[in-house]
Amino acid sequence: MAGGIVTGPSDVLIAVDVQNDFCPGGRLAVPGGDEVVMPINSLAANFLHVVLTQDWHAAGHLSFASSHPGRSPFETVDVAYGLQVLWPDHCVQGSAGAAFHPALNVPHAALVLRKGFRREIDSYSAFYENDRTTPTGLAGYLRERGFARIFLAGLAFDFCVRWSAEDARRLGFEVIVIEDACRGINLDGSVAATRASFAERGVVCAEAGEVR
Image 1 (cartoon, helix red, strand yellow):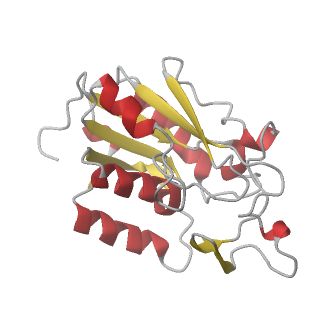
Image 2 (spheres, rainbow, N blue to C red):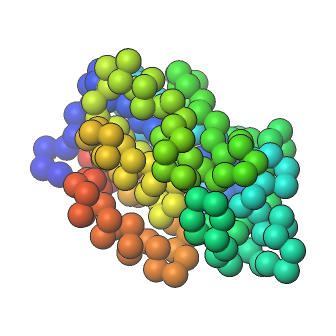
């Protein structure tokens, strides 16, 4: 982006799910997941306002393959709100895997938004549960604080970052995804599908070095 992107008081950085279980050695490791930590730390220094999201599942969560006898991780099943990918048990409330990566250093983050805590529904987006209608309250928080432009980074590019970006656009926010501060799972071509979705919806993809 020519001239770079200058951040201001109506901008907010949302760092998505930078947690141990999504990093190498975790229960649902995203390839290179720990590589987002340093770029996010650097990015956050350019923002007055930062939000962290945290996957926070109850034990026996509906999205866990272990909750569906005979099913395996990464299979898809029909649930009350539609199709659900089944995942390895991960980010269980209070576990070491649910904790933020120890090198994540964003002390001025004003909000930690926990999502996916309802046992019977998964939550990729920072804005809505996976039924796409149950709100997390984040949109109201951002609007009340006067934020208009949302920057997204974190894990995973093609799931929680994607759904958050799509919902933010649907809610009328300007959205910029810092792609080199994200990593993807790439399940059945999901990274390419994410880029196509962003282009269709007007979600801008940028690099961390462009933001100042």
